[in-house]
Image 1 (cartoon, rainbow, N blue to C red):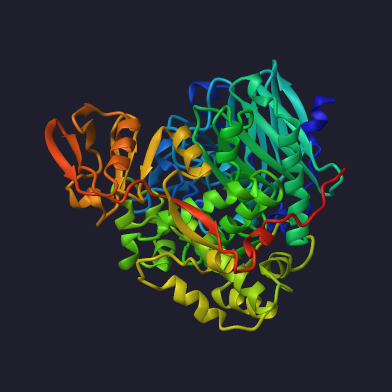
Image 2: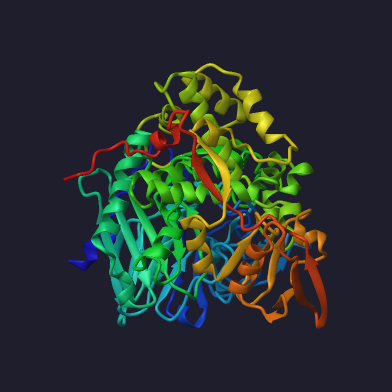
Length: 633
């Protein structure tokens, strides 16, 4: 039966996981998605209370988003009444916009809270971004809930229910108690959970929905839940499904543990919602374009998403930096260890993409070359070290655009990957290939063996201790040297220890060519030092590069190349023709309605990053990418 596909969810709990279960007080939260296609979500919350002053709060610091991203601006229609229907006046805190003060009347034992969430945000950002359209919705529970100030999320018990449009199906890590119908609309009544687990368990629902069981030979069970703009986008080739099944098996071999009772990849295949990934203990919120899983090129470019978010179940949700393991959603998080939380996950997720066959080794190396080159000769490195990109992450997530190479952004992802590749190859080198980062991961992420969802915090010292348990070394000094440096160049030791070198060739490597063709942009970063859209708009320039020295700037638009109307092909030809003794590149540029002629005096030809094999060194990088598990016949 179709119902079984969406309700056979087992959530294991350890003693004390839901402390609120002992109090006998449960919030009921009823959410209505009937108007989700019209960009509005309705909710009614019934909350046990005692008479007297009370402050309710709206979640502000959302786990996995590393900042105060709770979308309070789209909370509307907040009306609070007593059980008898008497309306209770509330007042917003004058400093903390996420707090609501009120006084509970005498003899009042429960409040009814009606609220709406306006799902009108643009399709960008994280879970606060566009999450609904005509045929699907992703519900993040933090957008539709208030809870008492000062309480721990693990100690607040909630009984949730969800009304979805007729004929829509759903996927979630929550356990369904029963399904009823309100007219033709399914009403999903979920079993009580803590507020912590509720916010950690989004629901994907849609008209065009498909659930695929992955790696049926593995326990616990794993599912790929897909909601799409149209039915044609749900038709995945069998080889693609098998690569995801291999991902399940490879993670078992790598982490040697699982910290969930069942896992759901909640994948939104749509061009009208935000595109990102957000990790949860027992599921992941994965949002990509409509054709991502059915078209080969799009699938490759998004190939690291599911391995990355899945890895977070171990690294980020189960093992979590102590300063990110806050007890509720109002306490500020500190992001200084994101180079582990995100950087290590970036490395492991990309390696898993190759080991599982989502990427070929060649595609991984092309991706790594492009990523490393974008960080090398990165002028912002000379004033902002890698550590500061993590420490300031809550601000840098919303930055970007022009001169990003001088500002720096969330580089702890890509550069963190280089650091952890360096760690991996160093361990292999020190032990003659007998040990690797895999040993560290199995011990660090698998501590305690198979468990229910829970948080095991760690510190910098714990990371160092874990590495020393694999092979003794000055790991603290090793890491701090890479975290605190202001050197111009990126840490390329892992690539070099892996038997490769970062080099530049006259043609784009296949990964870079694929990325340019799909994005509609051109990357001349390693030559004239700019990136340009297909319409000639300059998106960024390398500070100190040839284009910068010629006084070009972000936001300008290339109108003509050497006297001819701009086309991407003409710009590429001009760079090529300028090689050696060729002519300087002459541009006509428009800037906010004004035009001028600019000459770029550059003569080194086309330059695109690639990893070149150093045959005198061991092929350690190739060894890292080899699968740990033999394919299932």
